Length: 632
Image 1 (cartoon, rainbow, N blue to C red):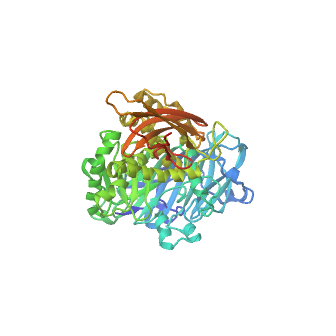
Image 2 (image 1 turned 90 degrees about the horizontal axis):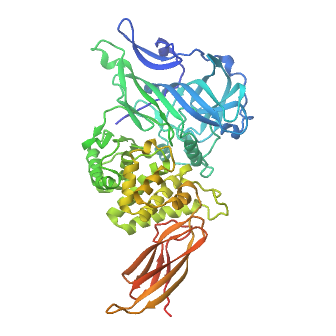
Image 3 (image 1 turned 60 degrees about the horizontal axis):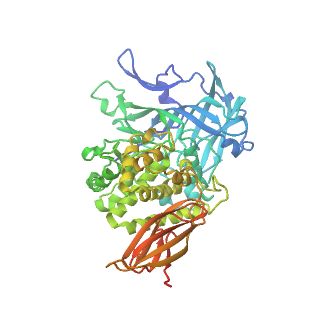
């Protein structure tokens, strides 16, 4: 399998002088000339770049990180022209940006990969296109694989007020080659750095993962470095969350010689590339240059960094088109098909009779990458049993979608736990859940006197860190399973997935689940989803056993009163178990934050101990509490 690059760099020179200019500001189309020949129509501009436009603007020393962070992208309209043979990318980008800061902005700061060059900026003023003054310089930041960004500081004729938007058009170009400079700078071995930073435009592989990996489209943010704790990863998550409501449109043109590329994947979605060969002589067409195009309609960006991949060959599909794999390792496909068959019954049971879309896999060496139902990862012929645990996560993305990241990523994580339970038992699944919870407990606030948002926490509906929208989300779904029951949660997930990708109401899933369960779940969603109140902190306050008199032939039984204290702010509903050897009796107990609750359990036999929580409810500390029963 080959990945074909998608971003060219240099300005239009030599070859581009032969291309026909469009009357539109910047379009990528293929037209038929009067002579019957195919003409390539690429970029044209009512405002070509000139040297005078780059002379005066604010310098790097006077632009602040607050100003850099004050821009939010509302809409991207990208015309992208690629020459993979030269690793080149040329782009006309029409942008709508909003000032989300508290102060007016006279200068706007935009970043691209350091290997790209800004060529011009203009703004729309009524029916006129007004050139803008800008300066560009390098900024150290690991949001790009080179470890630097080419930052343009654009001076506006009037300040952009807080909350106001502006429409800009910019041209830029350059080369995008593989670089691992940012990782090598912090001491990563060359081979490991290359396995992590594999973004490039090249004849044999074109893969661009976007902000946090390679800045192939305009971005705006404060710099972040890998050596500064988790700052870079937090910035990537916050940027995705902030721009989730933006819309994006891509028109793509790829120059090729000989064989055209087969398809493009943009933001996880596949489009076939329509190829037009320049040579009308069939005898010479095999080695003639051409242009392949695709148009991805405007759609909401969602919680992602825009990514772009090109594939050279057609995909190999499994039965029912459940998986479409672009690979040269054809012997691996049967293993993936067999693994999909193994996990299918569980997916059908919980999520519905069939997937919503095909799982596309691009066979690519290096660290895996996923975007919804697109998986980019090495494909190897391994046993289907070993492949199934990782594949169920990706297949869940093909089966279930939500516009809310905690569901979109949490449900696949939850299904992975269910698969572990299905194949190795509940205890093993709970051990895995507990390991994940231990990580969550390190970042969750211990407690707070405030009722709303604890310092440092993230509500699931505003989550930007994986530890929340994956780990905590999976734990929340596991708890809901215990509260409403398996059948009810299955019904809710299957009903919700029909509307999930269009759901713009953060409370819709709660309503679907309440209709299915006939339970009021507001107490749970308020503490665990809509707000982050930290984690519960449970203790067994008291255990009081009392023997009941024997009745008839029945042996004497015990009434065990258990009081549980919650010193945390989040409510919890936990299993409370009385045990004697292999004999157990369990009831569920709800303890609100900063309070106590009691239950009484009738136990047939002589009780030995009480167990509160079985590891299924996250806590600040240990998630299982035991107390020996002392008889008086």
